[in-house]
Image (cartoon, rainbow, N blue to C red):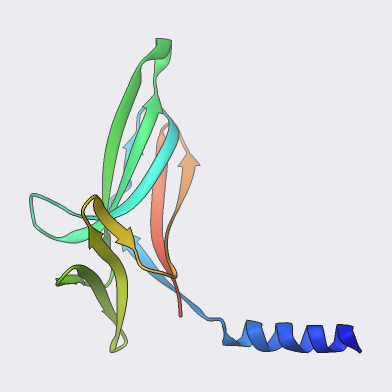
Length: 133
């Protein structure tokens, strides 16, 4: 009986979970050396003033050389700043992405920046945002 109740509760919990994926677009960006650490964050592109996702990549080159690269990705939906928050609007629904702190943009609860890396001759990154609702 306890197992049946536990399974029923798990099913109800699972049906209340939903997630949304927001794609990011950019030309394929490659890193010439081997990435060893990747940090993702929201940010503002200084040249155009638009908001998107930055991947800050620490790389190890040959013979003990280290290098850092930053890649910028635009979200397919528009990102706007309202006060100290970043929002996007999808299907008429306003979704909070991040909050501005003194040390940078912090993703909102339930928001995760995800990436995948393919190793072709050089590392190629694809980026997206997952939002729990």
